[in-house]
Image 1 (cartoon, rainbow, N blue to C red):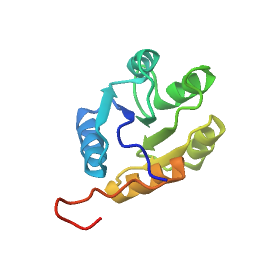
Image 2: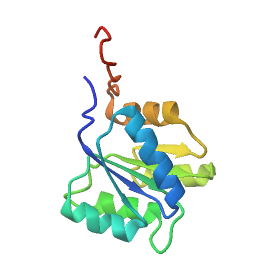
Image 3: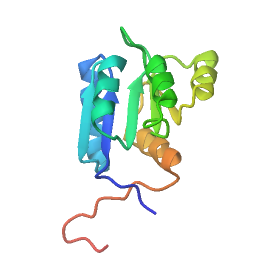
Image 4: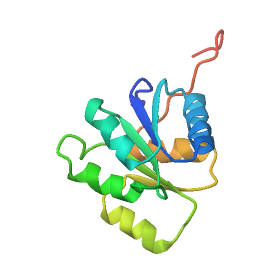
Length: 139
């Protein structure tokens, strides 16, 4: 089964350049509906108004970190099952353990490329990201 590329995805990062990079990688993979938020508080507000199929959040943000956001999402009955990928520049074992205990779906350490993002998303959903068929190419 393939992942639904039309599902809304929320990128949460306080660094605009990182938001742009992740957005471009998601577009390369074929995702169509991509929103962003600059911190956990803004993300929660967006999540209360729209159901996202995937959240990709940075760990280090102010005033609400990605870890705090993850905890709030997992505690919220309407959002608790939302797939959540944490992105961080730090590969500290204690952070990975804390995120796993809090219910993170997967974890990506910066820097990463489209293939890494694709494999993490596929791991979360247990399905493949469909390959875009080129016009005129045999399917």
